[in-house]
Structure formats: structure tokens, C-alpha cells
Length: 343
Image (cartoon, rainbow, N blue to C red; front, top):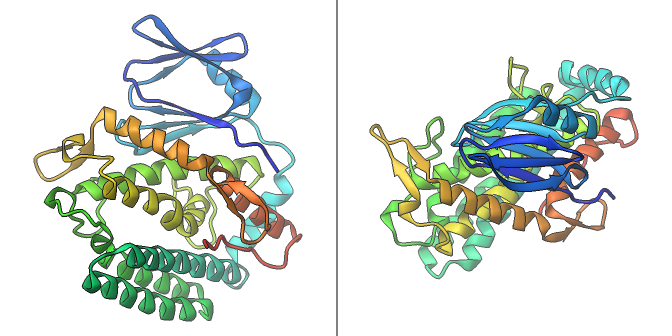
């Protein structure tokens, strides 16, 4: 199994990254703040006004370190990746599978069913942790509805039907998301999923953590030779990483949503960590973003037993593990793609 390497997030505005031998050096206002050996890095994420010198771009591409550029608030802008070799046959087969509706259907069923199953477990875990019987029953009722939707999704006879179940399950899940927030603070009420911009604090947190997860998944897909832009569930669209979004569906609830709920319920974020602009757009402050990135990195170090491999793996390697399994399926080494089922 591959070793979990670090992802360097550079969030200080005006930072300048340059090459210093075999290290990535970070300067802020002409002061050297950090120097990281490139062989310890898996990814580099530049948030907002962060400059990279051509030599550091070259070094990262040469060493297989993917670089993502995001806005200050986490919206994806661009990605730089060095050449990937030995994957043309995998990609050709990926395109064949994704082009034909019938060929893509088994994988779509697996992804949608895993998404619904994992979302249901998040609801049930929140129900167990709730001290309010009414809230507990609401969450359990939603989990039961998700179970039925999941059973239908597993038998979907077409891609459109499977996508319909995926959308329905998302609506059901987010309709009770507010009940999983056990904090009596109006500032953290959740009023439905909103993005671009997020319109409340929980949505701002969700969007931010989803950006972190997306970066990790795109890097993992690239590293195993798959094309992140061509998906099974999500259709092709210029600039959209459809396959990365497919994989996010199965990992979103256990990896991202659980972290957001934990940070809110443990009061690791405060109302003052956000800025609410005219029109309702809610943005994270700099210190809060750094705190969330630190919590995300810590979460990635935790180990769980992978349900398919039956091996203990760090959570940070789950995107890579799933990408590897998907690649094996595309190459014909597995009869079906084993989507990630959280336990």
C-alpha cells in the first residue's frame, strides 16, 4: 500500500513559492517561512493570491506532485499536473465504459447506492448521539426513507433512473441535516444546501471541506491513470471533473460531512469565524480556514479497516484506494467497482 504523504496548503495571501534545491520554499514578504522536501509531498494547494515560480512548478511536475489553485474561499480554478505515463489503455477503456449507457450503469448503481448507504449511516450515527427523542426519531425516519431509495437505486434500469434516485436521496439527506447540528445557536442553523455562494455558516464549511476532498480525489485519479474529467454518473461538461465528482458522492458524507458536523457540535468554529456579506454570502475568515485545514489533515491520519480490502488504511488514502480499485475494474481486473461503504 502506498504511503500517505503530506499536502501543503499555502493560504497566506501574497506568499511566493520557489524552488530551493529539492525543496519547495515559501516566502512571505521576502521572509523565508517554510521549506518542505518535495519527496514528502503528495499535493500542493494554493489558496488565493499565491505565486509559484516556474522552477517550482517544474519540480512538482517532475516529481508527480499535483498543484491546485483555488480562490481564497476554496472555489477551484486550475490544476497543474505533470505527464502521466502508461495510462493510455486505461483511459481508452474508461472512455468506452463511460460512453455507453449500459456499460456505465453497473458502476453508477454502485456509486449511488454507496452514497445513499453512507449518508444513511451518518444520519443513524447522529440519531444515536442525539439526546432529544424527537430529533432522534426524525433522523431515523429519514434514514428509513433513504434505505428504500437505496434499494430502488440498486435496481435502477437506466442511468437517468439512477441519477433520479441520487438526487432524491440528496434532498432527503439535506432536509434533516439541520437536526444533526446539536448546537442551539441560530448562527449555525442550516436552511438547505446552498453554494456559489454559500448562504449560511454550515454551507460555507461544507463547501470548503468539499474543495479539500475534491483536490485529494483528483490527485488520486490522476495518479492511477484515470481521467478525472470523464465520469460515469456525472455527464461530461467542459471544465468539470466528472469522475472526481462521481467519487465524491460516495465519500462526501463519511469524510467531509462528519468533519463539519464534529467541528460545529464541538464548538471548534464560532460565529465570528465567518463574514456575512450583503446578499447573504457567507465566507470563512483566514484563521478559521487554517483551522479547518489542520483538522482535515489530522482526520486523514486516522485509520479504518477498508471494507473491501480488509486492511487498515489511513483515511487520507481512501481516495487513492478507491481510485486504484476503479482503475483495476476499468482494466478488467475486477468484475465490478467496489464503491466505498462506510462502517
